[in-house]
Length: 182
Image 1 (cartoon, rainbow, N blue to C red):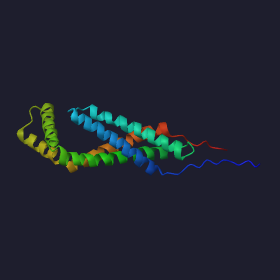
Image 2: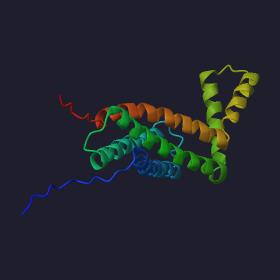
Image 3: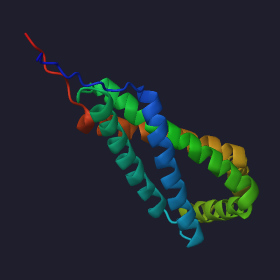
Image 4: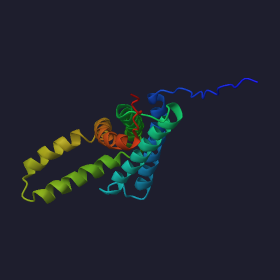
């Protein structure tokens, strides 16, 4: 009887396809967390919404580890680890941008008014002697950035910035360089 060599057949999947799956999962989890904060009237809190980034970090790590173990030989360079983590953040951000637009445009149009009021309070707290003209000028710019489109665009840029930073860090823990054989 001949010995047959068993060859492990790892199916191939692109980093982008894997990241899309995990990005959608993470984006949806972040969306649900945001809705819970909104439902309990905690969305204007400064700290609690930032905790959603823990979900993003976990999703970047788990999704990239899954790619490394399932679709490579257990090795993933830092560059590919970063790409995987960043793409997960990108896809999650895109899902959140669509949600934010729908939310601010159709679900709670009054949220923009709350943001404007909070901005006005912050301006007065930081400069109690602000003139009415200065207040009007400041509020003009705040109003310009509190439309559903602008809030969505700013949210995307904000999330992408944090996705880059987090991906740079998380990729350090995911990467596993292939040993060099001399």
